[in-house]
Length: 93
Image (tube, rainbow, N blue to C red):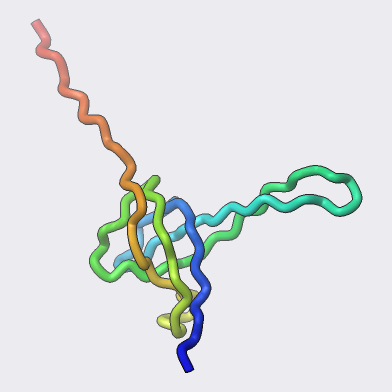
């Protein structure tokens, strides 16, 4: 029987570790009493085998077996890359 793995879509907020990125996933919830929309953010440590993810990328992550003490997710695909604008320094006269 094939298991359905959980998937989430989030944004990379840190890529300073080797083969690991930190992804934040935001969800909107409706408060039952106060009828206000609440934004909830959860951070996941995600396995990135090829170190492809950069800050600001939107990624799809998928649940997997435990890879370390805190890593239980891996990058399934990079949905959008963050555009980096290169600024050329002007010549000083």
